[in-house]
Image (tube, rainbow, N blue to C red; front, side):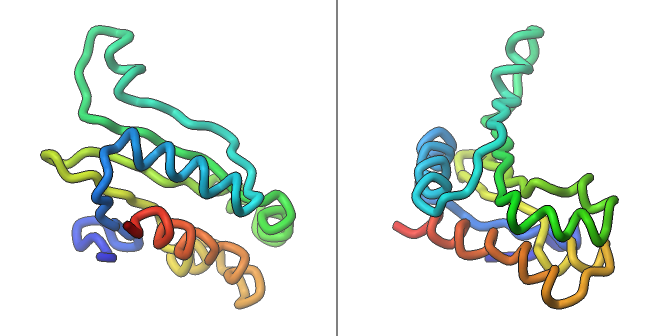
Length: 132
């Protein structure tokens, strides 16, 4: 896991799988953990639909309404960052998994420790995602 020096607060992990296989695995993990999959946005497909090319770039939006609702109740602007988002993208043949660090989100929205803990589930989900 690395925090991107160019983008403070963004965590990027490497996946040994292709972008498509990483997305499929993430969808399976979310289902196993009982998390709600809100959307999968294939940005490469959308670019191609208008005649443009883009590397594999897929945004997966997911979360737990039970965990996120108290956060949004306490900090309404946190709804700009929730549900959680994971970007799965190709960087010159290397699949990367990027997302906002829970601590960065908590700091941005001035969350107390209890509310911040509600965002921390993204770390173990992405750890499981990149595990072999």
